Amino acid sequence: MPFSINPAYIWPVLLLLVSNVFMTFAWYGHLKFTHSPLAIVIVASWGIAFFEYWLAVPANRIGHAVYSAAQLKTMQEVITLAIFVVFSVFWLKEPIGWHQLIGFALIAAGASFIFKG
Image (cartoon, rainbow, N blue to C red):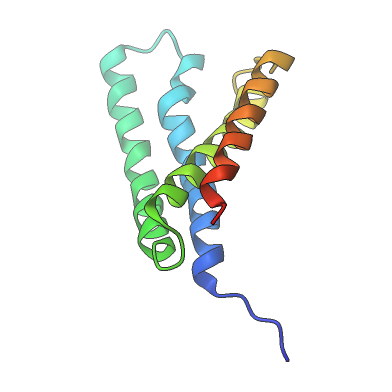
C-alpha cells in the first residue's frame, strides 16, 4: 500500500510558516529603523502584512478541511513563536534567553492539548 498524505495537512503548515515571516517583519522589522517616521513605518508594515494575508487566509481555508479553527490558531501561534525566535536573533540581533525559551516552551506544551482528541 503506497504511503500518501492529504495535502490539506501539509499546505496550511507551509503557508503559515511563510505568512508568519511576513507578519513578523510587518510587526517588528521596523524596530531596526527607529529614525523612520512612524507614519511611513505604519504604511510599510501594512504593505508587508498584505502579503501575509494572501498566505494566511488560504492556509486557514485549506486547513479547515482537516483541522479545527482552534487547531489552526494554535498552530499559527506556535509557528509565530518559532519564527520570532529566529527573527529576534538574526534580524534584531537580540539574544533569546532561558526565560524566553522556557516561556515559549510552556506555550508550545499548552498548545499540544489543543491537538489531543
